[in-house]
Image 1 (cartoon, rainbow, N blue to C red):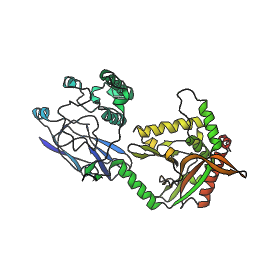
Image 2 (cartoon, one colour):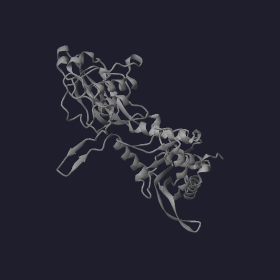
Image 3 (spheres, rainbow, N blue to C red):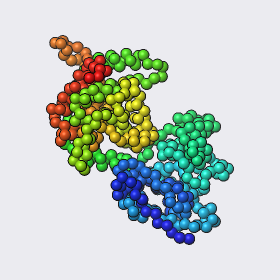
Image 4 (cartoon, rainbow, N blue to C red):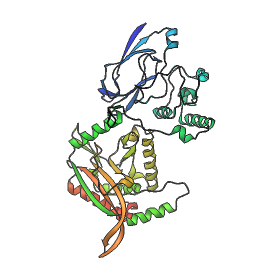
Length: 430
C-alpha cells in the first residue's frame, strides 16, 4: 500500500484559489478513478473535481466555505487497497451530495439508498466507474433521489442524456404511483447552518451566495453609481400588450413588459452607445459594443443570476420574449451554460409585482448601466389639462458615473420613455 496526495489543480483562467462548496467523500470511503470527490467554486464557475486515482480516502483538507490555494494538498488516498478491505468499506455515491448534508448524514453501505426505489437486488446493475452525464442532470438526480448508475445512457460511450434521465424518472414515478413533478422537483440547496440557540441560527456564507456578496461589495466600492428614476405612462403599451396576448394560441406564453422594454432599449442605445459598454479595469479601456447583449436579472433558488439574451438587436419582439423565458428558466433550474451566464453588455432587472415605486439597482460589473422595472399601477394623472386615469410605471436606472455623464444617462432614459409611451416607434428602425 502507498499514499497519494492530490493537490488542488489549476482550474484555468488565472485561478489561484477555490472555495470548497461540498465534499462528496469522507475518510474511509472507497473511490474509483474519475469519481467526483469535491465541488469547488472559483470566481468564474462551480467545478466538480474528479479523483485522479482509485483507493481509500485517508483525509481531506478543509470544509465547506474554506478557501484552498491552487497546488495545496486537497485529499490523501491510500492506493493498492486489498480486495477484502475494499469490499467492506463504504463506497462513494454517484449522485451529488448536498453540501449541507455532507457532514451530518450517515455513511451509506454499499450502494443501497433510501427512498429512490433501488434495493440491494439491483446492485449488480450499477456501473463500476463514474457515470458520464452533464452537471445539470447530476444535480437534478440528487434532488430527485435518483442513482445515475441505474440508468442506461444512449449518448456516446454510454453518456446519460436528458431523454434517458426523464424516461427513467417517469417510469419510476409510474411504478410508485407518484407524479413526475414529485420526483423531479428542484429544491434550493441550503447553506451550512449551525444552530446556536432557540432563537438564533448562524448560516455560513458559501458558494454562490458568497460570490454574490463579494461581487456586490466590489461593485459598490469601485463604481460611483449615478441613479436616475423616471415615471412612464404605459397605458398605450398595455393596450398593445393585451391585444397581442388576446390573439395568442392556446397554451402560449403571454407577453410581459420586458421584451417591449428590451426592444425599445435596443432602439435607444443607437443614440447612446456609451451605455452599451464594458469597462476593462486592468487595461483602463472602455469597450463599446455594436451588438446588444441584454442581461436578464433572474432570481433563482441559489441566488441572483444574470443569463444573457445575445444579439437583441437582431431579434423580433416574439423572439426576444421566447429567449428571455428560455435563459431565465435555464438559470432557475441550473441548466444554463457558462456561456449563457456571461457576456452581457447592459442589464434589465425587474421584481415583477414586487417592483415597488422605485429602486436603486446595482450595476452588473463590468457593465456601465442597468435599468430596473418597477410595478405598473393605474392612478390619476393630469393629461392635457384634465385629470384622468392612466397606467403608470417607474424606471429606476443606475450608471457608472465615471464613463456615463448624468446628462447622457437622463437623455437615454428619456429616449426609452418616448419609445415606451409611443409603442409603435419600438418597431420602427432608424
